[in-house]
Length: 308
Image (cartoon, rainbow, N blue to C red):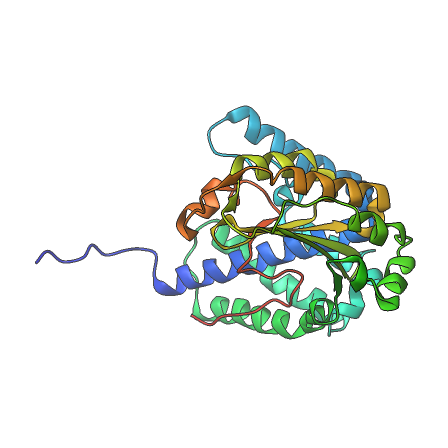
């Protein structure tokens, strides 16, 4: 039997790259969640002029080159990690620090080490054991720092029918000036057997549509998400394409949230066969949209470091 060819990329290099990828992808989602949650449609205006201009230039260049598949949406995907760090620990910190179990000075210090290793890996230089430990330590710290985000899901308040709209639901909606949403969502006509539900999740509203049979059309869903890009922070596609959860900022207002709910339902009037988990990513464009995930990934949620 022929010997396996020697690879210059060692296990340590590959493991470190994989962990860095997960960390940066998580931080990007976190910045997206917080920026949109606090500023709604105006979130991009909260970035510094330089960061925004540089990111837009990188995206425009990628589109102009036409060599690789660009993201169809996702300005933050073109923001460097050092700038992403500045977004999180800058003015945004005062608004989201209650969800971080860490001091600002420590977070900044650990970011400095992580960015140094990230730049080394980006230039494909060999990773030393010390470099790998820096990344692992950051991943372990990030797991602990972001643990309070779990409470957003644990304490969400949901409803799927007029009778479910309790005083607790109304109280949370009033907090975000969204009280009309409860009654108006109850009036949205849903195909027989399907279920539309909603929940207040932190500074977002989650709209969920679940099919009783069959799956959602991937073409209709991707068109829906492109149409409503300004109002969609995170979208999660269920197993086989049988459900869809859309998280939209409360800051968008009642009219926009109800309009989005109606659009979600109207996009589900075509029943198709489900797709396998292997086909799900390409069918629903999960690899081309910054905030589109499978239901296997819960967000918002703490970062979770999986060793190895």
